[in-house]
Image (cartoon, rainbow, N blue to C red):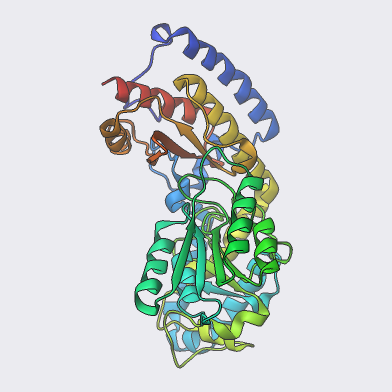
Length: 420
C-alpha cells in the first residue's frame, strides 16, 4: 500500500541473478524476523515519517519517535508557562538530570559532559579554544574527516597559522592499516599537538579503531579529539575505555532525540582549556566547564531535555537489540544490493555499524550526480551517492523501521533509473 504510487517490478521480467536475489531475500527476511520480530514495518507507527516515504538516509538527519517529540513539546510548554522560573532556576536542574543520564549512557562522569546544539558546535568549541604551543602546533587529521571539520581546520590555518597534516586512507583498508598509518606519521612528526578522528566517518561510512588511535597518539604526547557525530545510538560508546581527551556526538541522528541536541565530553584535565562558542554572563554549574556551557542565551532547551525520553524509548526495545538489528540489516541489505547490482561492498562488515557502502553498477558520473534527486522525485526515497577512487557508491542507512524489502526497493529503483 505504501508503494502503490510508484512503479512495480514484475518478477517475470527479472534476470535470473535477480530472481536468485529475491529467493535469498526471503531467507534473510526470515532470519531477521526471528532475531528481532518487534522491528521493521511494525514500528513505523512510532515515527512521523510521511506515508510511502522510504527513509534509507536516517544517518543524515535522523527522525525522532513520536513519544520523544511529545516530551519535547511538554518541556517547551513548561518553559513558556513561567519563563522567569524556568530560565532563572528550573532549566539548570532539568539539564543536570539529563546530563547524568547521557553520561551514564556513554560511561563517563556527569561533570565531564555538557550539552551543545550540534556536533558542529562541539567541534568549533574545542578546535577554536585549544591554545596550540610552538612545539606542538600541528594538527593531524584524515582525508575521511567530515567537511565541516576540514573547514574549521582551514579557518585555524588561515587565522592562527596552525599547521595541518592530512593522512590519506585508501581502500580497501583495515583497522590495523589505519592505526599503522597514523603511528608512522606520529613517528615522523614530533610537532603534532592534536589529532582529530571521526568515530564513524560520514562518507564513506566506516567505524575507525578509535581506542587504538587514542593509545598511539597519547604514547606520543598528542591530544585526541573524536568527532562522534554518527556514533551515539548507532554503536556502543564507553568513554572510560576509549580514553579520548575530547568527544562530541549528535543525539538527533541515531539516539532518536530531536534536532538540536548533542553532547561534548572533555576530560577533567583539559576542561580549563575549552570555552563555548557563545560567552555569556549567566548560568549555573558545579565546575567552570559546565557553568560556561550551561547558558547560551535565551534558547529553547527542549531538544536537549528530550534526550531523556529518547533513552527511555530505546530502553523500551533494548539498546543492544536496536543496534544489533540495525547492523544485521545493514550487512544483509548490503548483500542484497550486491546481488542485485553485481558489485561489492566497500569495506568488511566488521567496519560498519548501521550504514553500508555499496558500489553502484555504473561509471557514468552524470547519472550518479542525478541519482539521489531522481530517487526522491520518482521513488520517494533518497540515499547519498559519491565518488571514491574512480568508482561510485551509495551509503544506505538501516534503521529499526526498515527491513530488507526497502533495500530491494532501492536496488530495483536504481537499476531502473540507470537503465533510463
